[in-house]
Length: 248
Image 1: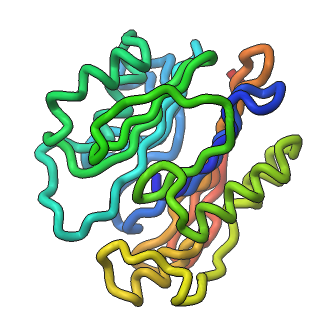
Image 2: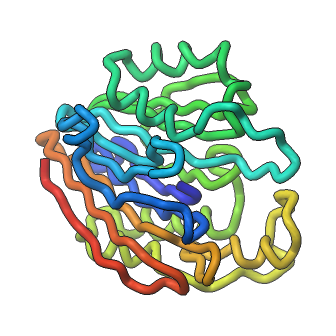
C-alpha cells in the first residue's frame, strides 16, 4: 500500500484501518479474497500475481498486517518481494514482536518498507531504515512512503479526517480515501522523484492511465473481535471496477 491511516485502541473498536494501494495499472493483481487455492483458507487478502505476495491482509483469528514501500528512487531493489513480509506473518504463528525481530538480520534482503503486524490486542511497527521494531500505543497513526507519521500533507489530512469520523460507517471511511486533489508545490515533500511526480503522488487518490490508486481498503475489528473487511478496486483514471465486503 502507499497510504494508510489507522486508529489503534482509541474507541470501542480496537482497530480502524483504511488505506489506498497505488500501483502501475498493468501489474497483474487479484482482488481480495480467501486464499483457499493456495492452502490458506483462513487468509483474506489481495494478491500480487507478479511476485506472489500481498500488501494488506487479515486472518479469521485476527492476525493482520499491512505494508508500505519507502520511496527511494536510487535504492537498490531487494532480491525478495516485500509482499512476502506480509504473507509470511499472516500464514505463520509467531507473535508480532517475535516476527519483526526475526527480520532483523534479513532487512537488507528487501527494498525499503514499513511493516505493521498485529493481533486483536497488540500492534507492532518496523521501518526498515530505522531497523527497530516497536509496539504502538493507543492513538491515531499514518503511514505513507517514509516514516511513521511523516508530515506529508495527504497523510496528515487523512489522519485528521479519520480522527474526526471515528464513529462513522464504512461508506464514510471509504469516502475519506477518494480525495484526488493535489497539494500546492510549497507543501510537497522532497522524496527524490521529479516535481511532476511529487504533484501526482501528493493526492490521496491518484488518477492516471499508467499509474494510480488500484484499491481502497477498510479493515475494522470491533469490541467483540468481529472482523470487517471491505475493498473497492479501480482501473485507469479511477474507473470503478467493483468491490466486496466480508464479515469474519
